[in-house]
Image (cartoon, rainbow, N blue to C red):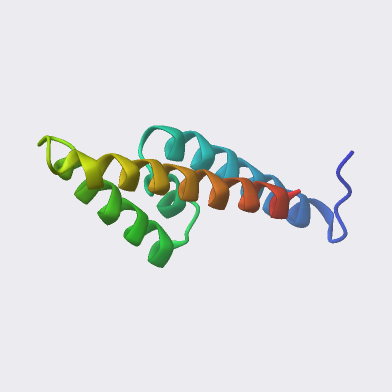
Length: 91
């Protein structure tokens, strides 16, 4: 049960943060960094998205895939971890 200290406005802020954290988690599952941007963490989200794009383009070639695939996996794990941390903080 969620209790609001300052009436409906506090409850609205709490649900909004939780909703944004869930939306960010779902977006980060598909595109690492996008969900972090949705949650409002622009600096971390931009870094994650750029490194994910670099990893994607590197993974197209055989030689680049040795760097690209691990980079994509690392960005995916990092993005999911940021989303889970935001979800726990929103509760």
